[in-house]
Picture 1 (cartoon, rainbow, N blue to C red):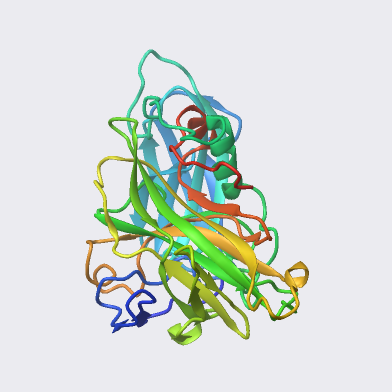
Picture 2: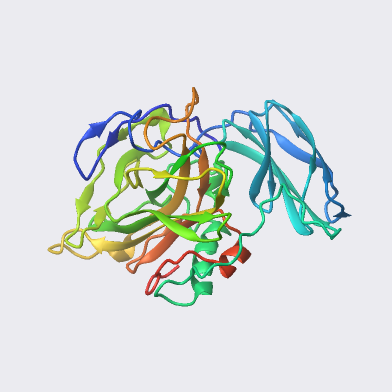
Length: 386
């Protein structure tokens, strides 16, 4: 995508009205909002050939064009399995399980701007399950909670990681991948990070938002963690009163200000966005994770449109607000982003969808749709539309 990485930010806690430095407890902007200056780069996979039937280990060979990327990442069916830094070519044997595999090679600059290529292969069954890929964890009882069939929950979540955005967020260049649709960055590989947080954004849509008496009501901001070893889901974060700030839409110079946040009688919050600013929000504190046991991560929240001032006309039918979910990794529960970098590793970003007068869910997931169907997180989405 096309934009530079914000370097710092201050955080205004809407729950305590205290201003904290970016080096303290709260998350920074996702690294998926940065710029790759190499806009003409490309990736070419020489081996394995697309459509081939191969044996494990699979010989991978790929090259990049243009400026040397910061890193080359290799994904197997959406899971990060290999990374090389500051190289323009990559060759490696990939130990993969029998079956269908989509091998994606992605060149990145500062974990943000990306170009990629994918080859689809069939790994022949040689009586061995192999090892470097990320196997599906065993199915658990997880699933639908008290609402609906588990397949509905899975479909609702995975749907936010496929297709295109319902609209374009105002002020975000279309060259940024998440301006157009969902994007996966680190996925289930935390690169040694031992903490994470969910986050969400609210944007005015690119066509503008004529509604002046409409607010976005937000609740149930949650993070769900799938144990790779146990195949069970654990809820790590859950709040209807997240922290957040209003950021310049393209995050230029990391500029932000206090957001228009209002506490509603039911304990949720409502916000507005526009005039060149979005609303970027997240639970606090961060959540601790076992970096060696990440089978999948889901972040999700619910949002709807409400009337700002009941004494004024209801103009929700003219409102054009978009919202989307994401997540970031962190080295620890406290402190700033890792090392000397100017970003924190992003996990993934879900689809930007229009906020409506009824409750909709907005999700991000690192779990393949087929696996979610077999073992979805126990989220109650009764009465919540996708």
